[in-house]
Length: 499
Image 1 (cartoon, rainbow, N blue to C red):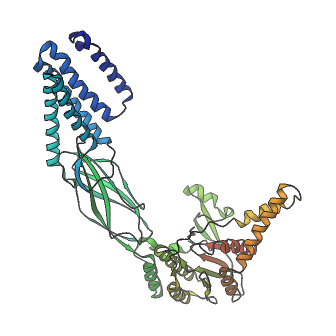
Image 2: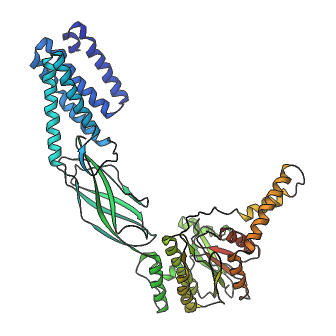
Image 3: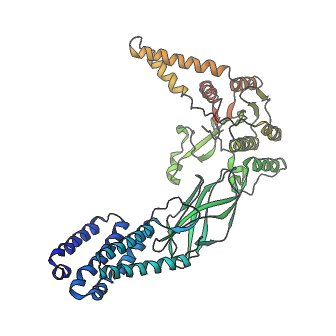
């Protein structure tokens, strides 16, 4: 209001417009950069408007209190600045370059207009910006964080959570973002402000066999005022990934040696995996376990489920124990899948052997039946699976396979549609019939079905089929066999099914 009254009549609208803009900016707050420009304009406008009344230097003195407000806006901007890809090392941010360009332009305008107060005000702003830039450049290093490297030992495929402590290497403060170039690593919180001397980063990851030994983090940081930026790479985490196949082999040797416990939390006790694969079925009550996907809803123990606040299912066994067939597809797409298959083969074999379930083996690749056996027990089964793991082959084929149609749903739809002899339903029934016949013909002559049939011919009893596969070339055959076996009362259990 004072600027409106004291400024010349031709410029009295400027303070009024500035007040209106202040109210709009306070209400909607378009961006931090807009707020910075507003404060710069206010600083210059106050000096120019008051100088005609109180003189050049007094007008400059009146405008100086705006500088602390400008400083605060710069600090607010540094907290929300968007980090963009840039070269490694330090440099000027986009906003600092924009402000410096603006200041130089104002010098040219002031010289052209012959405005002493504008030159004086712009000089004050230039000195202020020069000070904070020099201060930040000296106290904001290229790598503004310090840390002690952390070592993590993990089994491939296992999810891990850990924390790493970082210390600030900058005395000026600022904001920091860390990110991992790998999708299987997550960091939080983001962004981080390191005015505090120390802070904690939470890391969650799933160990990958193909991952690096030293896990890199890409960092981007800006100083306290958002004028200086830096991009850097740090390696605070050393990762030792144990292949699942190696651990499974060690576990098998411990089992054959007569011990049943491990030291890694992946499987710390074989007694804990006795019902892992849903092998229990029959009429005699065996025990209870936590409900797992695929368990029958008829077997849920509602009384204990309410008591423990989680679904508990009952287990039943045949009076004489039902034998099993371990159906193994040894074709893997890559090293990670091969490692997982080897681990699944061994863990399934140890679990079946630990339970004393007679188990036949049926192994195949995309062309041939590689192995079929009669029912094996205990150590015989584990030894045979140790040899089977050597047959796993990596194709390196990038081809992807679609999920096969649900045979139960397809058959159900076909049965309903065939009851209608005319119209579009009859045409659809004919199309579905062609699809069903094609799936049946392909599955019957698939190497998976041949391996299963050959193994069943060596077993005179009804069996539970335990299937371990990457679901690649045999996806349709497994879906068809699952449908046929369940109809005949011989369920098929798929372990760690992958698509």
